[in-house]
Length: 144
Length: 144
DNA sequence: TTAAAAAAGGACAATTTTGTCCGTTATTAT
DNA sequence: ATAATAACGGACAAAATTGTCCTTTTTTAA
Ligand code: FES
Ligand code: FES
Image 1 (cartoon, rainbow over the protein chains, first blue to last red):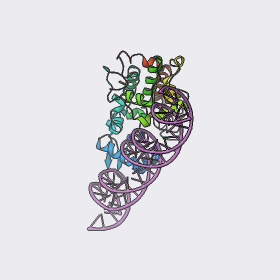
Image 2: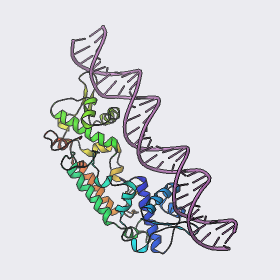
Image 3: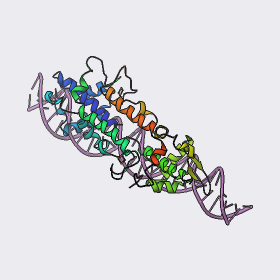
Image 4: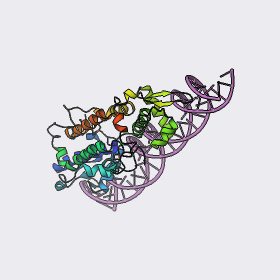
């Protein structure tokens, strides 16, 4: 469904959000440990998210990654997915035709668009704040 | 969403079904042309589908690929996707945890499972026969 | 019976995705 | 000021996916 890069990006952002809520900045090493992802690869993804102003990065000692508190409930998963995987998941054709086009649809167009739009709406409606909700109390997990 | 292999597999199966309905057997070359796919790569996928008894293949002159007429409305997209991409799309975790597990869910579990199950049901409920329905009359397309 | 047709299958190649390494830059604490 | 810290960025490497080529096997039609 999502690329590995995107999975790591979502999990990392969620963990950063969780830490930011508690007023903490967190380092690459810590993030990779907490979401069980390869560190250097995760670094690339965080750089990408930082360039897209989804997360903030601070260099130097006591530096790390964070998200402005008042942004945490404004940032939606859709922005993260878009920054990393682009818009193919939102507008692409299920059978790989160059573009999805209702006027010259592929045989799964109708059914596929329904599902794709559900996914899109889900991502657009899910904020990082919501993502963090169950983590502290052990209702949800970023790794196992 | 689906791999290229899977996209080609679905399109190829659909075209073979269409031809089979008209009592025709069709060749690799013809299939690749009609679905706009790389011929040799498509061959691999057709072999896989044949081994999984989703399509029939016949060697020699006037040979090619076909599907038993009475199977065309029994074969569902889910079988094709499963043969090519496996079951990750049906049971995998949206954030890449080893398995999706409602008892130790990731933060998107509930919302993701809903979408994943919709996709699963859609694939299980869509037959090759249905896929061919609009093709002849130009309501749907396998390439553009 | 033989030549041609067509899928099967193995080896290889290109591309994309995923992942690593290491020097550079910015920042902070001492 | 300086040394340590931590992100940045570029080059590289491994793995997976996608795609090609060529020989073999099977079958048909002449
Ligand atoms: S044309 Fe294929 S999904 Fe819309
Ligand atoms: S645990 Fe992640 S989708 Fe179920």
